[in-house]
Amino acid sequence: MHDYLIHKGQRNKMVNDLRRLFPFDERVLDAMNVIPRHLFVETALAPFAYSNKPLRIAANQTISQPYTVAMQTHLLHLRKWDKVLEIGTGCGYQTAILRTMGAQVYTIERQKTLYRQAQKNFLALGLDAIFCYGDGYEGKPLLAPFDRIIVTCGAPEIPQKLVMQLTVGGRLVVPVGSGDQLMTVVERLPDDQCKITTHGRYRFVPMLEGKDAGASSDHPKQERI
Image 1 (cartoon, one colour):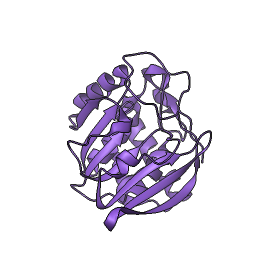
Image 2: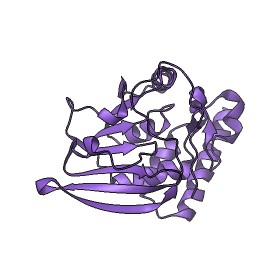
Image 3: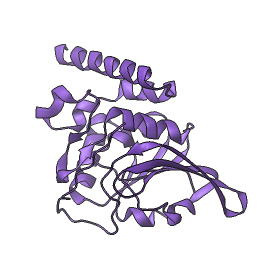
């Protein structure tokens, strides 16, 4: 009970800090106040789980800092029961936020270690989502269209295959560029037209093609606000 109260207090503080930084959708903050972020990191890093910084996870990757998770989720303009495709499952924390907000989540991870770990995390929390081990560049055309798509790695350019898997009126949130990336929102319009807006600079690990059976990346994901 003591640890539960400590973590609950830390989540409350994290959410209140985020609220002061930006007028996020309160539904996003509510979800982040529910999901125990400390369960998605190694035990040794649990004391730092609610600080506003990325933390290392398996496969030499990181769990995104809370501000980044909140911003990407906020930019999705998520609605309950939206069909969402996530590219880059990681440890599953972002996935859990989407699921807690009522989305139907399909998530792709190219790292086999993380693909397995995220499923274990979800099982421990009693959550459900459709986990896919595969190439995020390809998306899931057989399951398309999707109402929302979120990419948690830096694409060199807007992934057109993913844009074409959006419903008309759907939104893609993706960091775009090399080095520092611009957080980009692509809204799909009728007649294959798109509206594109940008929302600040971040830094993510590059979006890679293909699948990785377990080798670690030399470029852990980093973000900045």
